[in-house]
Length: 121
Image (cartoon, rainbow, N blue to C red; front, side, top):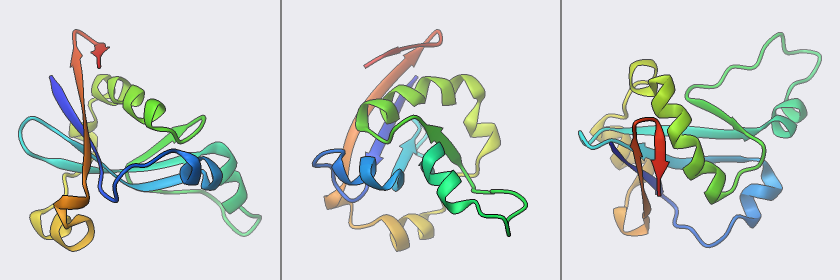
């Protein structure tokens, strides 16, 4: 099974996402043509936003990583595949893609192949 990991704002390096501990401009694309937004956070970022006034922390399509880097993002695709993210998450509509993630000319796409539960990338 091939997946596309799309950095919709382009990709230069990991400095900004390492510093901020958050990245939400990444899509996970399937071979069927569906795209799912990944909301990538670190535990440090969550604890920084989680104050005494909050009883819980909720985020759609949340993926928690040790650090937000391209390699960690690509590596998490295998775990998402095994977990069955396509049954848990809703794909973006065409209108959502166009409104929030276009123009496609800015996209930087990496292909991750997952077969028999093992990533080949």
